Image (cartoon, rainbow, N blue to C red):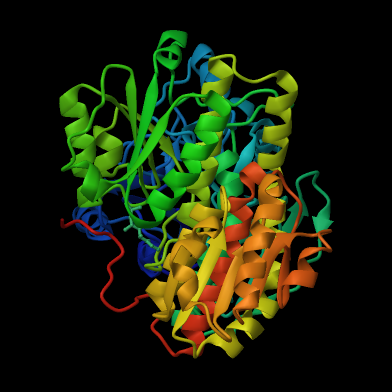
Length: 609
Ligand code: F6R
């Protein structure tokens, strides 16, 4: 997500902060900015676009001083622009704020602050923090910051600079990462270690709910209730390249492990605290719009298309309207029947995929309403769609999509529940059960990551095979498609996904002694049917790895190995069950010595037809 750099010391703040931001460029961003204390004033310079644009402005208007903060922004609330770039200032220009994450209750706070006469310069959620600092300032920067964070809900990392307290910066962490680099007569703050590795290898890694007071001569840490915390420095031994990957061997592995956070962020602010409602303020649909949808076309490519297949089943089950799912390169040339009342949904991580964009444009030209699910706020898809639900996965760098897929699923669950709720299709207890299950997904995703050693062992044994099959029924079928695609694209092992009941219509001929079959068994109502299909492949000599919920003792009797998932509603199971499949592809690719993050013949964003 966004990159943060802060500095208190004796060097040129401009050099340290811009240099640090450059080291965070790999995370992706759409604008950048810096604020420094110079001549008793807070001076800020910001620019949309690349860091080079910011540097050009700084060349014309250099920032003196040795205390300051900087930021590279990955837009969430408000399009990429100079105004929406961080740092954000209060009305009096005394506070400057950089922020990574989401202020969930910013609309309420913004309305309150507007009423009290504050004037806003941006569309961001972050700006409320600057005005709230101004509003609540009691003469002490630490107690004011503590009071402000008590008022804001959500996940964030935050750094505060104050004109009247020029010797220190305040850093706060709730969910989004933040480290403090320890130096001699100088200290650093960063959202990620590479930003400061040039200057120090000793860092405090802030834990959730901690605040650091950062001065030239030292750092003190506190809990959010103001209790001192005795932190032990962590010595970084990674080289600069490994540091960019947070110590993981590849971006893909890092991104797989980021899924609990990415799912949590995508849910943030969209589920009422009592789990009684989905809130999607970005849609702002009148009851007539929700009621007027008669059918839905979902259009996407690759992994996003697989998310669409799950979306179809979920929408049809919850909303009871027909949903078609199309591959964008087919849809754009097909003689589509999309009469009035057709909602076209496009799903795209990058928001720039040529075929998806063309399908969107064709739908708009026909007069269909287009709703986009995308990970990139300023992307073409986001700009051209009528409505957008943003997934807050953060930049995805590995070519193989992982956290974008799980957050696309979360966005689809939220939208389907929202539409069902607006059309009165669900009882209160049904909504609550669904939203409780969604809310527990981040924790379930954490737990499922513990299966990594088992999967690594399996991958070691099977990395030499030529063919493999993924089978499943119901929602386990699109899950099988995604598992097979992941394995193909990075391990180069041929993998086929089959609706388990379809095998005997031809493909079963390929299942012979020792052929690995990954059998997905998360759809309880189809359990017995899938079990019969597993027996069919076992009888032909397949080596079967089964995936089921913990507590299922029966499956182990019919397969060779089982991976157990934490229990959840079958409807939301794909968001958790895909994680072992991603790990399987990852470890198989590593075992075969492949370039995991940049597989052959593939690009991250397919902007040509
Ligand atoms: C597979 C993968 C691709 C993308 C597809 C669509 O791991 O990443 O299949 O899902 O190229 O890309 P977006 O979502 O950017 O439109």
